[in-house]
Image (cartoon, rainbow, N blue to C red; front, side, top):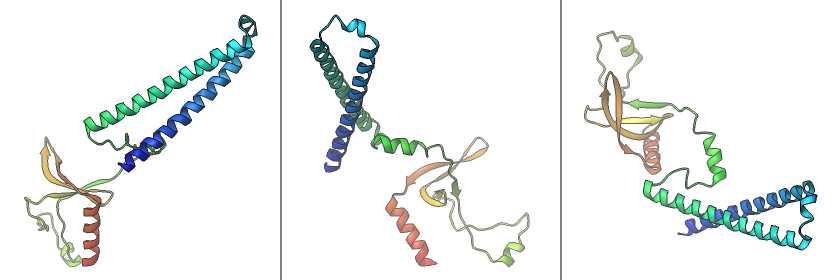
Length: 186
């Protein structure tokens, strides 16, 4: 609850900063327009122009604030209806940084089993040799991303290729436990 309040406060502060920047830009544009159209300004008095422009800016500010709030509400609704999205819940600057990484390819490996063999036994292998692996056929296979176990699944054949059906995605804690067990064995 506290985290949600902090996120909302950050969003409000960001919205206010955005609105203040927009207000400043509008004031700057108004100043440029005033310089370019002095003939049109002779119809109104200075006070009327200031009053009108401030009212326009205030209305624009209110409209922008309302749009930002509506966008945030829509994001919250879509997030709750679609499940948790990894990028929608992040601040916009973090989303921009993350978008730089999203097209970087990573190496995914499917491991169906392994075997420790002496060099002597490896040198004796021939094209008809059979190597027993450390897993049974009905055991789940490992899905590794850049060498780190992230999921377990079942091996399938799709047309003429192998495929994997994800059955379980490991949590961070489970991955840490697996790594610590590997280091304590070795």
